[in-house]
Structures are given as C-alpha cells and as structure tokens.
Image (cartoon, rainbow, N blue to C red; front, side, top):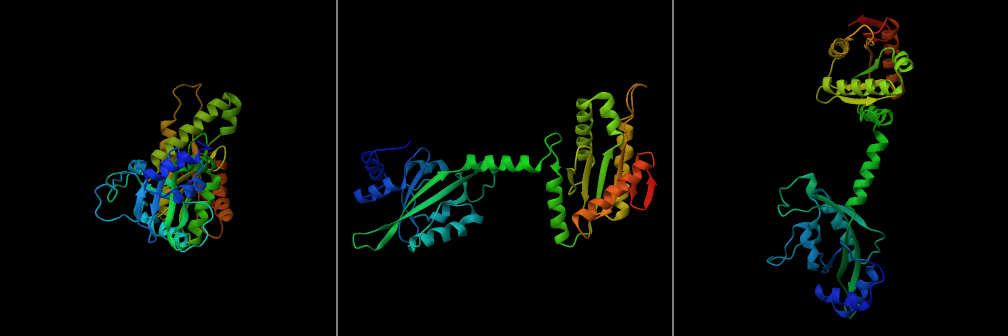
Length: 319
C-alpha cells in the first residue's frame, strides 16, 4: 500500500504512542504497512510500544509486568544475532538492509518446536534521538519474509532433487561425499543400475522406462536402512551411501537388494521383460571422482558378467 499520506502515518504513530516528530520518521521508514509490525524500542532494546498485529506472533504485552526485549521475539538460536544487529543500531552505527530471523509464532513460545509455528521475519531499525540530540531508542519494522523463504527453499530443493524420482541428484550426492571426505571418509557406497535399460527404452518407449526407474527408486528407498543416503546419479544409475557398514556388510546388503528386486520384478508372462539390477561397491576415499569411478567400474564388471551381480573393481561375486 504505497504513497500513504502523512496524516495516515500520524494516526499510526499515535496508535503506538509516538510523537509527531517520530510519526514523521516513521513515514520515512515505511512505505507500506500490509502485514508489517511496527515496534518502538528504548535505548536498551526493550519494547515500549508495538502495533496491535504483533498479536499474530502469539504475544500479548497488555498484562506484562516487565518490558520484553526485542531479542525475545527471535527463535532461541537466532536471539544473539538479533541482539548484535539491534545493539549496533542503538549505538548509532549505520545498518544497511534488513536482518532476517525466525520467530516462533505461537502462544507456547518457550517449548513449541513445530515447524508450522516458525515464521521468518526481516527487521529494519531507525535510531531515534530526543530534542537534545541524544540517542533515545529506535523505531523498528518487522516484515514477514516467510513466503520468500519458502520459495527459496522450494527452488533449492528443485536444484538438488531429481524431478522423476524425487531422490537427491548427482550434484547433491557429490556435495555429501565431499563433506564425508573432509571428515576422513571410509564409508562404503553402492552404485546400482537396472540391467538392459537401453534395450527396454528402445522396445517399450520412454514412458515405460521412466516408470521402471521410478519404481526402482521407490524400491531402493524401501530397502535402505536408517542413515543411508540415496541419489540418482543420471538417467539409469543410483547411488547409496552406506555409513557404519563394513565392506562385507555392504556387499551383503547390496546382494539382498539385487536378489529381492529380481524376485519382485519377475515377469508374469513370456512377453513381459525380465528386470534385474546390478551394483558396484567402493569405499569413500581419495576424491569424489575417484570414489565414484571405482564404484562405477565395479558396476561395469557386474553387468559384464550378465547382470544381477554385485562387484568391486577387480572382484566379482554373483548374488
């Protein structure tokens, strides 16, 4: 709601206990008020007045014996960040832009940890001075940025997620491998692929091939144990990080996956395709590229032996 008159802002200022001078400053600070929360702070950061819509955060100051501090609005882990931002403004140092932080918008703020109660707000401050020019607190504007945060989160998820299967994509999986390598590595990974996918695509078309890949992804999710990290590396290869597993346990788990899939995908008629899968195993070490190359080399060996196998580079074993 842009281009509001000074009279309108004067009315807003009166409602939250501001003087005419402060009302003019408020007019300079704000250009629109839809959904915004206006707050007046004293020189120590305590809330003197707030617009009525602060009740949307589950706060009611009408019966408060002690003035709440501005940091009381922030989620616990972000209170110190908000405190530093406000302290700098109250000290007269210029604050560029807005400080964003989450608020627990719930009456039970102290114990509530529900995601649906967490909302993101951006805070802007304008220092105030009295007639003698002494700093006398600040005017604040809190603006909801929840929609922007949600959109950013959605865009991030799309950037790191395969659109067909919903699994993490190669970029996200490699980023995870780098983090594990930075901590020393040593975990096992398995790279799976449905055998003869190219022949299946050429015979039945892209739609059927996509259905097979989607089904195999859901099957892997079912077979995965707690802590396993799944990803789709490309059109037909899937990767699973197997933390806290020895090489023997990783092989046994991968063989169970391959055997179970072959049983579940057994053709119901002579005309239906026989679906099987193979896997290559490797240890997370050296570099991301080296790790994936070793696992994919194991996959090549497994498929070269006719499929439905699990292999490590240089070693093969039928499932």
